Amino acid sequence: MATGIEHLKLTPKRKGRGPSKKPALFATSLRLPRNVLDYFSTHHPYTKQAKIREILTEYVTNQQGVSNGNP
Image (cartoon, rainbow, N blue to C red; front, side, top):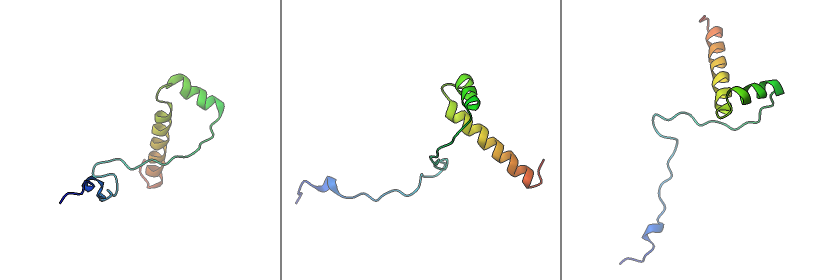
C-alpha cells in the first residue's frame, strides 16, 4: 500500500568529491599590496583570483622541489 511519502525517503549522503576530482579549495583572506592587486587587475581582469592562485601554487611547488634537492 502506497502512502504517498515514498519520495521523502532519506538518501545516503555521498562522502568526498568522487574519483578524479581536484581537492577542495579553502577560503582565506589575503592582504596584498596595492601595486600587486593593480597588476593583476590590469593584466588579468577576469581571471585575477585564478591567476594569483596559479602563480602561488607554482611558486610553492618549485620551492618544494628545491628543498628536496631537485634543481
